[in-house]
Length: 274
Length: 244
Image (cartoon, rainbow over all chains, first blue to last red; front, side, top):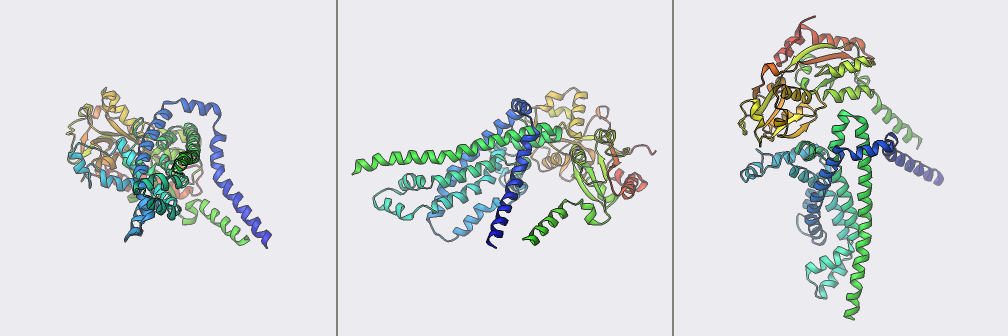
């Protein structure tokens, strides 16, 4: 019975791996290295890569800057309505991206909720690169905040309290104790959010439209090419996987690197005080 | 465990079956996005998938389970016919292009030539979709292609995307079919294009060769080509080809 259970679990794992890996493998099996190189040199790919990297970088920076202290607060404090706030922050997770796009349009559109005010100030968001940034930030932020709250909650609270009793200011406790201790979890959450942001499609096409070199991100370029030439769409898709894997690896390595850095910085400080 | 496997297999099989089979009798019609309003009025029974004509043609090439294909251009039906994937296509409607602007007309567009002004936010179709190629044909005929296309803020993959962005007021103007403009007449204003620059926009319909419901599919095509079908198409703003 026990053997049967293990065999079934093994089978399930094989099915899961095949199901997830096969389409990615097909992408590379269908595209020859020559085609891949050709697509990598194409103007469409370069323009889309530039737009994707730029908008994702801005959106991700904003998510980190606002999301990290917010997650710290949510992890450390228990207050009325905390559950509600957490749920609100996670809401975009369950929204289909097209709904997110429609919602953003209803908020920032020229004649919508905030659009009139922004328009009076001379700011137009719909169908611009700013719209791409907002769409990406909107859909990726819950992935980061969720992970970041969990990462800060996993930090031993007694360490933070000890730092406080030793006279460190709350800001210093956050920056020098909580942040380094949560770095691993924060890095993982950051990678997941970035990956989700790079793949953003539905909200972007609704809210920002698609224009090469301006709002056409990699997923939009793949969709546009799919309409014209399936082979080019496949090649850009394969390149997207390469870019995605590179970013994920980079971010997986980053926490380990920062951790070694922070312990290195910590040791001399400890030795001088003794 | 075995029950689970059988259940999973049954579920996969059920999802993979062509939808028409499970519906029992209804046919599936792939139709250009610009037919969204009128086709269900001509025949409410079939399942419809409305999208860009090119995308639908691609899905037919990939073996989508579909019985009838109606496109906003002769190009894709004729290519599919050449490859034996659809039966002989027939022209069933014509259309013409207009410019739509939001009701308030924020960019004060009075004619197609105003689209050359800098700062106008224009939405057009992607060159791969019929509306996008017709738009470029008109601009070429008028000799203002580069001046107008520099104002493009988005290239949409079907007509519905263009209409939505103009109707919401996000874009200042867009090129659409006159039939689409009619559907959003309360939110937009229509600006005519010079008749001499209009490309011939012909809609073609064909029975898909691989259909298992050829009779029902032919009946649907006949219904579109019938007197009643023509009347409904005309009411929706379409032009009509001469009766054969």
